[in-house]
Length: 481
Image 1 (cartoon, rainbow, N blue to C red):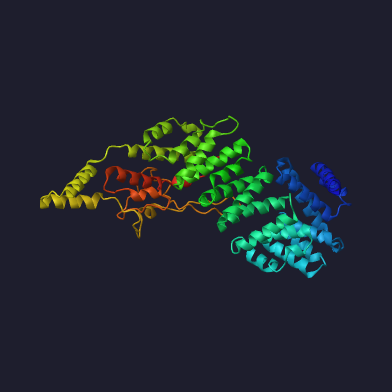
Image 2 (tube, rainbow, N blue to C red):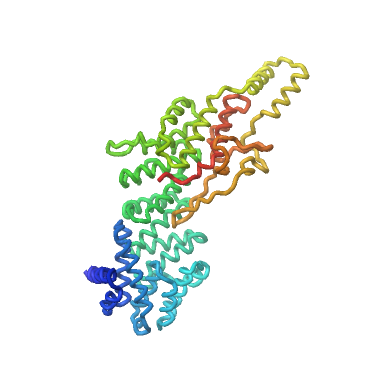
């Protein structure tokens, strides 16, 4: 009840501030810093639960709280609640200048002052200094309203170097502040850390908890990035049934988009089974509302079978896709898939037929004139496909590749980079790289390629098309919107 009273006062101040800031602060004489900060937290918790309309209120409350803390004097900070409020304000996205100035005027215990220094270092982008200052302080030993934020900050700082300790701290943050923005952020970070740790059970649990409570948070897009990357990275440890259980808690539109993104990434990484499953779920839809006409679902499902025995059917499906409904990167992907499909059914070159016939003669034991043998050997040297698994010091892909920025949107942890190589955007999507050294089949190529015979014209074409698929830079483009 008290929380409602405080937030009611804050909302009244916001309405006054919209017309006259001076009038607002004239009415603010009775509000202490801790009351304003508590109002800010309540607004942030509403936002975490999906109330996007509260975002402007958060911005205004941050502004008002900042002004109040700048005006606070040593007398205000004799109340420990006000100094803790200053620290919480800082860890809620506050101004580091305000925190540093206010802390310099306060007389309080050494541990609180140390936390203030650590928070300022954290806000100013000095993580090493922040870790050194905050690491000895146990979040469970301070009041819960401060400990929850302290655990979240420490967990974020230790995520890279000490992921196991970071996960423990994030659990403490959730324990101290359930149902709040702190828990939302802690869960979101836990998803990414579980992927980095290779902990499929923890990943599935954190994802389930996040979807159940915070699917409509404005920060849920960061969770979606981590979730899709995690499904790809942990695909050997997460069953399709578990994946379906998690996505069934989403609304139909979000579920469709998640499956489309998984299908795309899985097709790129050569995970045919996962790509086919995700594509089918995206097309299937829910409650009788299918998505069979969604061009993205058709495209991604076709990628996993572009070199299969049903290539004629795949080519027909690709030909019916409405290019105008695809993003630029997906249009380039469609062009590449059509080019690869075309090469699979293209007539075998004469040189390859001659090579096959020569191999047949050798098996039959029929002697060949020396001149003809020399000519065949020369043809073999020029046309023999590369041996899968051979290591090249300068792969053809490296000769034309350049790194593409693929910065993660997720706050938790950057997604594991795909093993697929990239080529420059200005290279033709379907053109094989040219180099004196034969390209090496990447790790993402299907394991079935190991059984292909490089002397067989059809198998050679299959191997070539797989290499071409892995050389398309758009494969690592932005996920569908």
